[in-house]
Image (cartoon, rainbow, N blue to C red; front, side):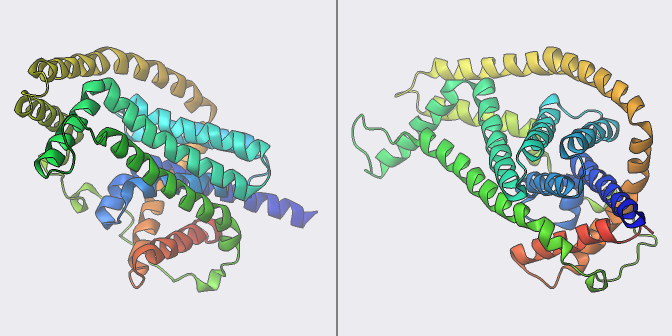
Length: 345
């Protein structure tokens, strides 16, 4: 009887720590990965969430309930730590959590659920970006890509006359294809990871010292140059499209470029001045109610976050002997083994 109670307590602790790590991932992992100079940050953040949801399901007694509870805690902490996060970011996290709760709650095979979760969430991420581009810039965005590439190909006599390479379809296909392949790879990796992490011996985890090194502050994160910030990226893309249409005006009506420019300004204005604030206010109101419901769990998670940052930093430093994907795999192993099997310091 005591062993059953002990096993349940261990599972409950594992679930709590995994939720805390998920909260760290969604509220600040991007900055940490940037500070640690970890490659493939976008794919890794998405993949890391899939991995954590898979482990949550593996250690949970009630998968559906615990993943949903974890999702609410993560969203509340994300709102507390990053209050200016746009609604689309919450939507992506909610999609992952809800889909994960449904798949792991009703599909008992861990590998199958992890694979479906990874592929579907990666495709959603890719399609969401493509949809946003189309909403902001309209169809002329894709048409301008066709015109631009056709112009280049005709200069090199690779296509003739009125032929078109339909470059926009190739760009969309390649982009979605990359995310699909990444989703398949992450799904296979995540599906086998719970058994893999369970085989790790505590003695094999390198020792570490967190004293005085638990935070990765802003001073360690280089400020992005202005041309890498999203709002400037949008303006640069808009100007680029307009210039392309201008220089190709003999084949493509210049008025389309003017239309794209003012349409984009209108869409951005409606989104940032009207829709986003209203949606954010409604969503924040919902999260405030949930914050009261899970006050104790949220407080424990918030207190654990600084230590988790230190564990992540030291785990990455100790994986430096590995290279490429082996380093990322080893980093995940020792990070998650410490979170699951080591007592917090």
